[in-house]
Structure formats: structure tokens, C-alpha cells
Length: 173
Image 1 (cartoon, rainbow, N blue to C red):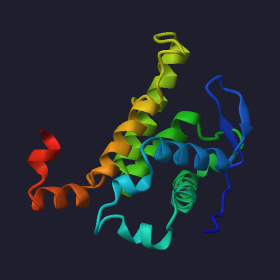
Image 2 (spheres, rainbow, N blue to C red; image 1 turned 60 degrees about the vertical axis):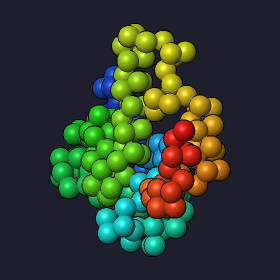
Image 3 (tube, rainbow, N blue to C red; image 1 turned 180 degrees about the horizontal axis):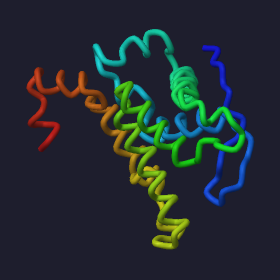
């Protein structure tokens, strides 16, 4: 959707100013979604199902959400002035707010884990080798997701069907 953006600069952590790039917001949202298996993990009928109907792919949903982040950031007229741009932290806070507001809690949690992990790497609390992104080492997460899909319990609906059909004991045991 076309969005009018008046923000021209972003203030980095070292206080330097760089050009505003919505593409970076889009990429961060999409990476967070992909790190947990996609936006469909957070599908909630009656909450965000209209988004899935209107924007079918993860890429389209991420584009829509990045547009909303830009709209929210533009609500503060201070950000329209080059001397008062939004900070990286404000942008990240807004991304988390937008994700949670649209029901993408798992994606927001993954994004927030990544954000705090990077903070701890920058502060020296952990090394880059100890940093695992969203909290789940990718091969481990992919293995679990593949097993869940193979057994039909990768979604809430699938898990409910397993329980209804009486296969829960087999699944657990």
C-alpha cells in the first residue's frame, strides 16, 4: 500500500544519522517471521485472518506490516525534522508494537529475542558464537517443525484434530 513517509533520517546507536530505509524494516520483519516458520504460526481467526486473506504470502504480510511501522513512526511530527529523527530503538519498539497489535506474538518474540541478543553481543555479555538469534538454533527448530508437520500437529487446528481423533496418547507417548 502506498505510504507517505516524511522521515528522511534515522539516528544510529553511535548517534550518527543515516538515510531512512523502509526496506530494512521489511527485511527484519520477514527474517523474524521466517526464523519461526512464517507468519502462519500466529494465525488467529477473528484477529488477523483478514490479513492472511488480503496478503497471502509472508513477503506481502511483511510489506504491509513495514508500511504500518512507517505510518506509526510518522505520527510523531518531530521525526519529520532532520534534527529529530527516530532512533534505532524507537523503530525497533514500533516494530514489536505493530507485530503484537496484529496478533503476531511469536514473530514479535523472535524479533525481540534477536534484538536483545544483539544488544548483549554489543555490550560484551555474550560472544557472537553464543548468539543464536531468536533463541532457537535453526537446525533444531527445523527438525522439530518437520516432525510436527509429519505428524499433523504443526498448527493449533492440527493439534486439535489429533486430540479429537484420539491420537494424542500416541503422539505424547
